[in-house]
Length: 325
Image 1 (cartoon, rainbow, N blue to C red):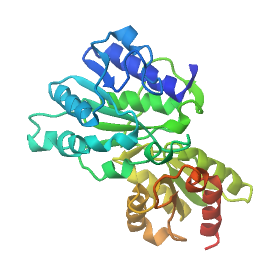
Image 2 (image 1 turned 45 degrees about the vertical axis):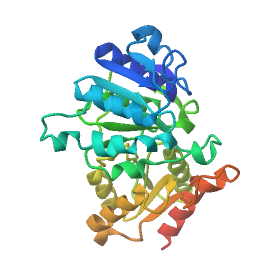
Image 3 (image 1 turned 120 degrees about the vertical axis):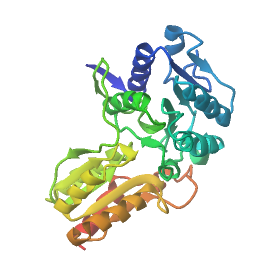
Image 4 (image 1 turned 135 degrees about the horizontal axis):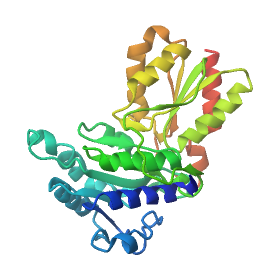
């Protein structure tokens, strides 16, 4: 075990993936000798060579088009989009090409060895073009997997599983946690299964659900609520597509209440899908309406970033409102 921050854990996963798979290529804007804008790929070019870790032109559509091409030929493509906010020029290549490649060919061809890494979310004063949380756009697309880690240990295991999964995976990395989240991480090779959520804290009165950096907010809110005698079950969804319906439904049947916290805007955020599914499965068990604690339906602000972010205080208020409904 070693103490690592989230960036170091991601770097370790990439190094292991490239060491164990000679066909793995790591590429994107400035990922070569420079190591990327956040230095997530530092030293990979020096260790594995410039033919396997290299810079691309500044064209997101081109990056994913190239990634689709080499993945279709059986290579392992690990593409970086420098900020999730700039993934949209590649939207067509992701949702119309990568996601449908296997289906339209009747499984004759696929791009299953494609992983797209990208930093997402706020918390670094990045304003409207470097703070967005676009995960819901992609969870609407059959054929993709969407994964978000909450800490270094999870990031390494989930990323290795994503790279080795036989489906195209979008791996959203909470940039707020890159250097802020530090923890014990196994030095060796390990994987955390995709599609499985995790109960981080067991409880009996209310279920709190989040992913990525928002896990910190709901855990702090749970601490506050438990001082009032409220037992909170805390779940990290980890994989958004496919998401662990059974785990969440079983928890809500036990607690009778659900708070969903995500940083993205409320309208059509992924929390809406969770709320719809859980009320259908658990309607007769609910003691109060399902509540979404989210970002606002506005562009991500700079001066008012703290007011925009759904923090532990707004989550705590939602807990108390749900408990007293």
